[in-house]
Each structure stands twice: as C-alpha cells, then as structure tokens.
Image (cartoon, rainbow, N blue to C red; front, side):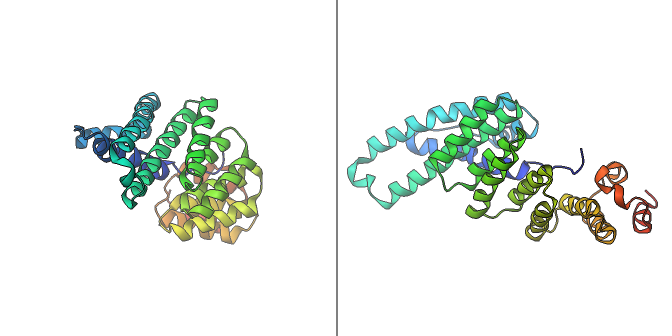
Length: 261
C-alpha cells in the first residue's frame, strides 16, 4: 500500500478521556448521584476502540449522548435564574458541551471503523454543529472523508482543525490525504511539520524518506530512512519491500542501511 499510517491512538485517547469525564465528573455533579467507577472500568472503556470493540464503544457513547441532555436540563432547572447567568454556569455549560461533542465524535469514529458511513458523517457533523471551535470534531470528520476517499474534503477539514489547534497528528492526517491525492510536495511539507512537533515519531521520518525516494532524491531518502531507524522504526519488511523506496534500493547508502538486517 505504500506509506504506513500513524495510528489514530492520540486523537482516540483524547476522545475517550472526554467520555470518561462524563461518567466520573459531569453526570454525578448534575444529578447529585453516585456513579461507581473503578480504575478497571476506565481501562475497559479505553480498550473498546483500541481493541476494535466498536459495537461496545457505540453502545457506551449512545448511552452517554442520551443521558447528558437530560442531566443538563435538570441542572438548569435546579440552578435558578441567578445562577444561570453566573460565571459558574458558563463554565459548566462549556464543560457539558465539550463532553457531548467528544461523545458524538468518538461514536463517529466507531461508526467509521464499522463502515457505517452515513451514521459516522451524521455524528461528526453534529459534533461540529455543537462546537465549531473544536479541532477534534473537524479532525474526526476529516478521518471520515479520508476513509471514504474524499481527499479534498478531508484536507479542508484537517486545515480548519490545524488552524484551531496545530497538532502533529492532524498534520500527519493531512499529509496522508495529500499523499493519496498525489500531491507529494504538500505531503512532504506536512510530514516535516509532524516531526518538528513530535521529534520522536519514527513513522513520519520513514514517510519522509519514502517521499524523497519518490522524488528520486537518493541522498535525502537515505538520510531520513537512517533517522527513522535511529528513532525506533523497525518494520524491515516495509523497508525492503515498500514500492515507495524502489528508487533507492540499488544505491550504496540503502545497501549500507540494510546490511545486517
């Protein structure tokens, strides 16, 4: 397939953490209820998407999406008019909205992974409607567009997400969209930005090596491939078979790199 994908773990973890925030903090405060949540429960929730338990993730998020509006309505009624316009009200509302947006976005990712694309699009768009300032929401819909081959729309959403909150994962996502569009120069710029923001990300170093190989810049390709290996990249099957590195395989620098592997 060519260049490898950066796992969606960074963004996924952020979304899951937001969901955990519902169970542990927001819901008990709004309803004055006691929610029994253990460390094991939190760990299990985090594992749903990590372990591709998408149906379970959808179920959990759906329950939260149903509960939150009801909890907020009770919170409003119990708070009274004076409280309603206080700073605390604004803070509570911002927290509530952030959590609800994360739930829709998280469920959208699970729907995307199950290839239920209509539902995924609806959830990501709902997240954006709820909070147009959410970088995660735009990134989530960008992932949906990418999965369905709508690279231009994915790039548009990633670009908005980057303007809202520059993040190495989103630069990586946009780079992949540019790559699959065949816009290799733009992909290279974004991958370089990715390693600037996260110098430990060995996969981005590898992808930069692939792009320089495509450009037939042998020296730079070998240079970045060496850096990738130094940073911990160890997928030697890709290094030896990836079509994107074809242009450097007969070079002395490439042969030196793979000697002993």
